[in-house]
Length: 292
Image (cartoon, rainbow, N blue to C red):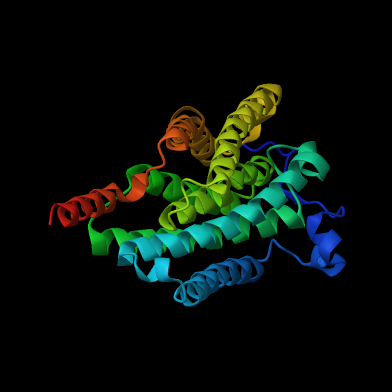
């Protein structure tokens, strides 16, 4: 696979999501390395600030203070992920329904919005992967699927930014994070002992449905691959081809089906899958107290 001279990376100047917020942001040269690094760093520190703010505000809650250290870290990360999920949902909806520039060339088309979204995503995954790594080292327990998803995403989006290709799939693909806010709310409500409420049940129903929608969107990306296969095969850089379709295959046939099953099972059996050992300990202690 080689890059055809007819399809060289170019930054579209048409009005996009950034332009709708502030027209001057459309005039920034997002191909400049220092611009990319500033957005990535800004994203990293923004999500670090959200984490710290969440910890400070949650410290006033009795439920939060009663959690183990690892659970408190997970609580704060859940809020950070929910914040990122809202951002991704907005950008993904824009890319799917309103953006017309990226559709013109699924391999090389770029826009100011796509550059900003990809840099922000890299900043988020840098923060997420750093926190996960420290947590796994400290607590000596690794979530293989979660780490695989996040590290592949960090490498994949970094490669997209470096090569300057596949912005179409990368920006549209952000909408897959639409499940994250509902997943975070599900876990927080569980920790607050609200699993028997209508609020938790409705949120869980929406969460399961978002995973169904993820499968529909993943099928759409495979359909887009089929429609543009000649261009993708002939012109997409080999590194991007391998990275993107490895991730899409794993997400479509392993991650999303597995998470859909887990969240569907959780709808009828509200258990915290992440900290089952804590639940067992809590139940054991409760039983012991009753015997006394």
